[in-house]
Image 1 (cartoon, rainbow, N blue to C red):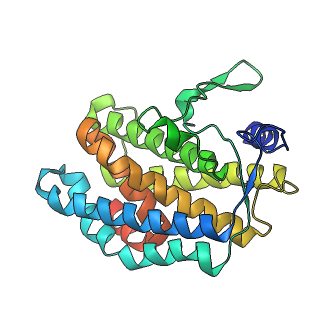
Image 2 (image 1 turned 135 degrees about the vertical axis):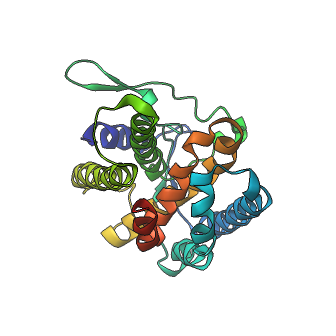
Length: 252
């Protein structure tokens, strides 16, 4: 479960005399700044996809049209930052959390590599944000894991007699059930934590926003270095804003 991650976030959210560590409020200025940065990220990534559409692998290309059709729905998700007046606390957090940065000691889990995302500037990594960004990053890592497993099967590993559409449908189900279980554990453990928004509606809205952000951020680097993983951010976004189209794609 994710109780260890919640414990990490709780420690990082403690008051401190060091201004570099002291938590900060999620005020109106920050909410507006985050909202506009999300809009800019969305615009840049969709422009990137239109420009490089013909270079995309076929399994990624078939998802681009339904993805771009979700633009208004994505903007509506981002606008929840303002319309819900999301209240939270900005703290230090892991900053680059994925399954590759989790070690199992035999009866517990250990987090490693706290330097943040090396692809971003140090000044960007030093900005305090919601710890839910770590949660979004870890859940995205599970999406990459199930997609990689499906790729291995379809490449000839032959551990199953399931067809490609059946594997994708099963993978979507596994992802949904897995993250549902993990989230229930995290929300339960963090129920009294002040670094989270006060209501489940705000908590889920903020997590979804950062799941979308993580997916959008990954599109460009995956295009240049891991095109086999490109369907993952596409599927994450469609899973959140247009699950019907994702089901249709999985059934093909």
